[in-house]
Image 1: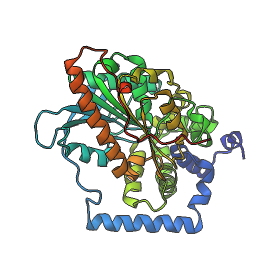
Image 2 (image 1 turned 60 degrees about the vertical axis):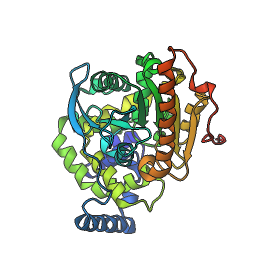
Image 3 (image 1 turned 90 degrees about the vertical axis):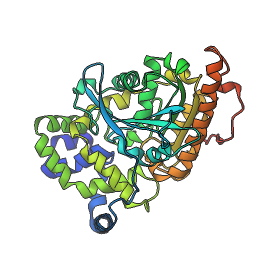
Image 4 (image 1 turned 30 degrees about the vertical axis):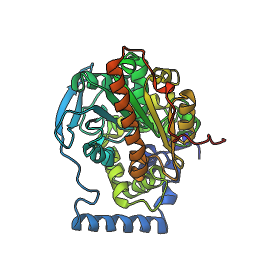
Length: 396
């Protein structure tokens, strides 16, 4: 049945399947995943997770406490921000800003938040925030749900919370696109204060050319438009349908967000809970900006920064080839394939990613120390030999 046929025959049951697919990019497979032995397996996994959580409430380990505040975006939307100081309480050498992706919130940086807070060489202050209409940040108009606006929001965060000192930006998925939008909007920042960038499981453009083209997350898909109207007109009904499809959605999270089916169910539950907490109309509002995102030209603005590009080789949402294309635009960048990882690579393989991130931070610390002694326009990262994270590019 075509997308238009589904549009014209939307029963409540069809809406339930479509809601699950819209959230996670696989509506057509909802029935198969939710049926028979697959449904039983999902229920057993979730029951086991529930029992384990009762016995061990902090399965993923504690994260350091932070100071919460709000920053007003340029259009007045309230953005929820959290700051975590270095473990020794001293003055940080760098500030790292973590920028999450679509349908997530700052909790997705669980392992990185803990790792960064414990560093002593270099000492790091960590800033996390929730994108507009995500997590604890405020609602906003559908018209403002654009990647360009997210870049402006990041600019506002930096002005308010990180007004001075060297900065490293780390962006996952839509968060990486947000950093590109900031480079497009304010390239001077990347010459003067932003000394490093990590782009993880993201794309500079043509998102619909792979991965997401097989999803219904497209403004051209009538299902997305129908669901957007349902979520706007009947939000309570849409939420009931979404809850009813909970186990099916959980299975999509496991299958599409992680490369390994045996991933700890606690990690799947963490991602599933953030997606479930994101309003459905917020998800459909971002469909247009994701499918039209094209900021390959903005990558030139990162030429003065240390850059780490990483991607999961089994990413079904934004395939690894997008990371290769980004790295090809920046010959000085490190390219790190996270073998076997899916879209949530920083949760699935935190050890390997965090080790590469730490090396990036150490290079950034060195660079910021050099720049203190030189006028702007001194040696750039491309002038120095690289350390071998780059792997041979794969053929398509």
